[in-house]
Image: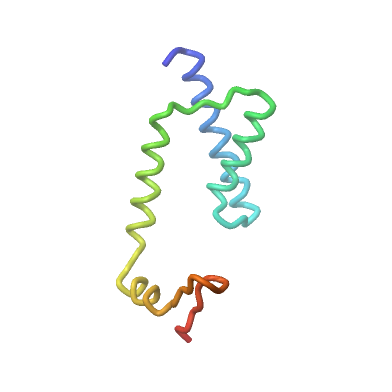
Length: 97
């Protein structure tokens, strides 16, 4: 990475953090993801300077998958087995009530 890429990487991360923080303050669902997405997208549309190395995609996907996977419990699997999905209708019918 050259000097400009490092500066734009830091700037991109700071803008993402600020966007997530502002969305969280406004009580947006999934605030840090949605806020960062919109803030960095707006920054990139106006400046064409948002930058993250390609390997960050791998790291963030693994981290996100690990985080979500760590939140599953046996009760969640039992609830999934109670939801019956039809391939013809409008999707799943939850009969767990």
